Image (cartoon, rainbow, N blue to C red):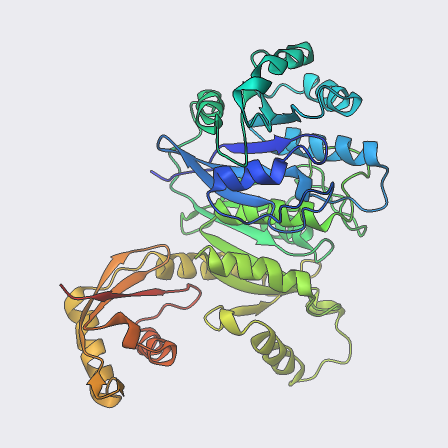
Length: 440
């Protein structure tokens, strides 16, 4: 039994109604920049939330910035993205501004969706303002929930209403397949890779960046009976051009796919090399603790290759993605099918490493050998003592190391112990986490 895609909640509204404040309040941490000026949201637009034991993903649409677009067009685009992505929409308005034409425009867009909408009236910072909440009944979304994002007033009642709208089958869906996603910039060839792996055309493929319009999870089974579920993150549900070249939206789709995957294939374009966006989404896969494989696509298009070309490119990748030193690198071509046959077995192997468990006795033999070869450091006459370790979870493999003083374990020695564990047990393709804990 796997925990599948969590419900998605999107916060929608015209600029300056407090979307980022509410986003931070629900997420429980300040991850969007909050400033009392319209349109300043520039930071993370995606977070995890939890309420009464229900986990969900949260989108702040104010952070989805579509450049060179009129104000009204941007509102429409952000609302439509939320409609596409969300299971439940929080429609946020502002008591201090009252009901505006822009609110009506957002409401008109939301009417056309089949998604449940919960109306929240923000900035109701005192009881005297509550009588003005009734004006918002005119929007036609039932009872408005008066809240104060700054003070947290009423947010619990709002979340009760949101959670009540979650689909019943959002959690604990039976799925024994290995779920993997392909992430990367537009036009690195993700859709072509999907088609080539499947051996049939199930998604739109074009040389124009941003042409895929359907997010597709495709199941397939290899000859050895292994079942895979493949997610193509290029997917965008609306026809037309309004989502093209919106990097924030591409990031949103990638992050959601990563969270719903066991293994992530970071796809690079051999012709174009490495871009900053590649590093950003690969970093998110690493932070999320997923297994990672770096796939260099369009290798057939690289001209004047010799025996050292691949080695040189691999070295560039290692330099640029130092935090992914554990990730295997595969050079492929969706066009010629070069080396594609290697991908499913490699994904399976990385998944096995990602879910591997090590017996405590075996682990401690390795730790003791590591301590003998390179004794723990001392500071101010006090020596770090490492007592024992144990594996506490998988996906990724996570180890607790019990010591006399966690503060004495320097990052470099922690890295040394991680490397010794990796040398003893094959964890290719997966991060491993070490947690230092004082022995009681």
